[in-house]
Image (cartoon, rainbow, N blue to C red):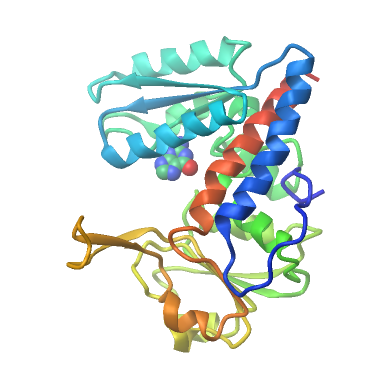
Length: 304
Ligand code: GUN
């Protein structure tokens, strides 16, 4: 059993590039069989996503969350509301979903329009349906190592990738660049858990001499949102490099005029890393897969 409650995947192909799509498929296979077991008991796991406004990127993410639910035999519903929804109306939706026994997972897509209080919305979601792992109760459970809470999907996916590849985390120096509540801080909390046992350093925009820290990393996790900021000279030979970044940069050779890159300069760094995730095709695929894991586990726990 892995730290996030899913089973260990079968062995993974040997190459220094981590195949996020293949790992996500192995997670989804596990979720499908758990969905089938629940359905045999008359329970269909259900995720409801609330999407406010018309942000194009959010609409794409939400579409793929809904499609993946359906693909795995779960109910996937999206409630769409215009950007001028009031705080009270949004809270009313959350309350209704909290009370609905057919809804096991609730996710309010972020960012919300500025006039809405995101923290208050997240705190209103029942912690046992908070499959994003953003509610303070789940943040606390992650820190104290209580397994019935939910860890945020991206860091949970990163840990799954490391464990699936047999990366020795115990005693390793893990350096996380970025201190967001969604990735950096929960990533550090997962890596330091008993059973994972890394020594963790969190770096951020005020860190002095960043490269001094990154060069000492056995496992380097970049989650800053700055295109290709981790360069080859910042990485120790043989390090495992995980790139959580998703940055669009101009590229005149592409029809769209842009291209997606991570926080790591993939080409040069892949020459020194023992394992590395590409962008796209790395961590991104795992995030949705872990959301599915959290949703099926919510259904299991709510029905036990
Ligand atoms: N916006 C971008 N990523 C996420 C996520 O993981 N959860 C939610 N709720 N909103 C997001």
